Length: 479
Image (cartoon, rainbow, N blue to C red):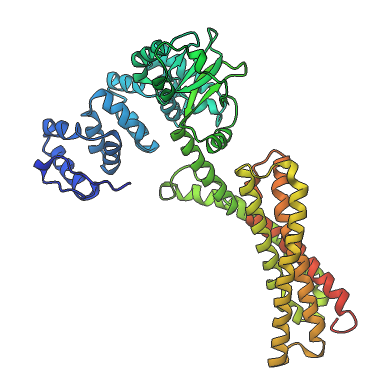
């Protein structure tokens, strides 16, 4: 919960700079316990929706519900939109017996926030709540819920201001004053024709600086960016990153304006996508709730699936070791370098996979760049392998000089380690960089080629490379 300095309600003895947890919560709990609702209403009316949401999340049931019930209708809806999903669901459940209050709340919510709430509810509950909406709000809610899950249509709101190209600037400003109160944002207005096709977007600043008698059509340059309602939400994240806008219009397949998406909703999506990718990179499925609130069985289940897959993959490593059992028996010294060789390959592959997945996520690399990436990674792998191989050879030389560990053929052993590191690191780098392209080509999230998966693949193949080089160089000497 964010820490905010408070200077309000001096009658309660609150001091500037004191946090909500330290002062506000105990005072509110005391007022609730005393049933001093008149004072409580007066105190709460002085707080912003964000601050009230922080307070409600800090309170325990039933105090949180009591505080929410005391809020004026408009303030209640604004506060509800700032609450975490679990708190929203708890309040909806608590208000189930107060139909009028629940009806008012649902109708007052902005369409995008209401859609987010409905997505978290079971189908039958959503249907009951839809029936509580006014005909117009129900039409909007059903339309938004009709878009595919994780599409831009699920993010958008229909609360925006549209103007016509034949209007004057004065007419447009009058229209904004009349209808702008319920708009999600007033930074930008949208120019549409009689069929509601999007023609342009104009910043309100442009209208304020223009002559009142100027026509909207004269201000248009028809250079605008629009999202498609059916596109994935990740497209919206990329567009906002590129164009630095507070809102972008959303159209259907025919170019008809159907809503807008604001940057606050896109930031939520970006955070969710980043969290999901981080979990996948770590070899785990994304959690559906905060870590400490996720049931233990669910937490174990989401991690166990990938661990089992990786374990089965690592069993191939044991098979590879068994295949070279004879070589290991004749030259036990080779086994000493197995962890060094395969970990270097796994680390290089994980590095490459992380770099390419990130580059894909931010649009720096696309499928058609695979050849350029491969050439760069082969060169990088050779260079990195050369550095590690040189260090490995020096290590063998130093230990031989100090302890005589590796016998008369120490130079061949050092060369085997060095060349193996070059080969394994290059292979790891190449595998790690190409797997995301393969996943993307198959229509799978590139983050699925997680670093543990890459490391497991390189472990198995790295052993084959190592012992193949050893067999070639040490045959007739150590072997």
